[in-house]
Image 1 (spheres, rainbow, N blue to C red):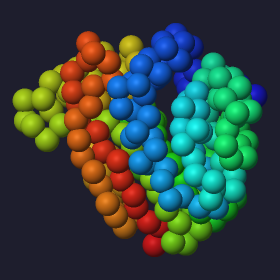
Image 2 (image 1 turned 45 degrees about the vertical axis):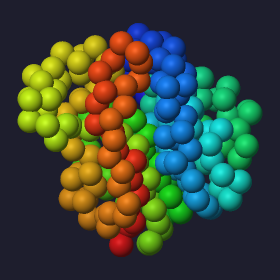
Image 3 (image 1 turned 90 degrees about the horizontal axis):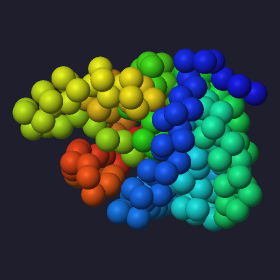
Image 4 (image 1 turned 90 degrees about the vertical axis):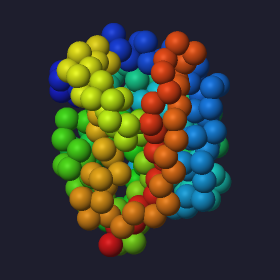
Amino acid sequence: MSQPSDLQHPRFARQYLKMAPVADRRGGAEHRRRLLAGLTGRVMEVGAGQARNLPHYPGTVTEVVAVEPDDTLRAAAERAAAAAPVPVRVAAGHAGELPAADGEFDAVVFSLVLCSVPDVPAALAEAARVLRPGGELRFYEHVRSRRRLFAALEDIGTPLWRRAAGGCRPNRDTEAAVRAAGFALGDVDRFGFAFSALAPRVAHVIGTATRP
């Protein structure tokens, strides 16, 4: 089932299929493992992309519902699901309208996706809706720098980068957005990471939060 045309970025998706494995070899795979460690029960991953996270889900997870709007990436995710160590269902859908009932999941995962969703508060509200009370939010994102000069450069570059990179905005403050959405923040690790040898190190976070 195809998603709305404004959520389709086939040219960027084809490039991302090549870039993500490079980033994983440079440390991204370990970031993904840290992001998912200790999860249990039913998990919804929002914007699952080509499903690079699937090999890292622990055996305590009983099901992953991998939601992805882009047709190209979702096709790759469906292929990856066959080799996953946990049961996986790949679903068409987007962050602003998740294909799930209220309180259906034990955890929701955002992994390198909140930079590109059109409406972050709406996406986080949907995550809260599908989580059970006390359910866990996990997020791994690149975020706005706390260094004034770098942050200014990110602000300047965002309009162009957004058009070139499938809607990605490199100047979002994800930690603040999660807090503003009413989640109780847990551990948040902030670090620099370059996804390729030619890219600069930019701020990333891996964090946990709980739905009240």
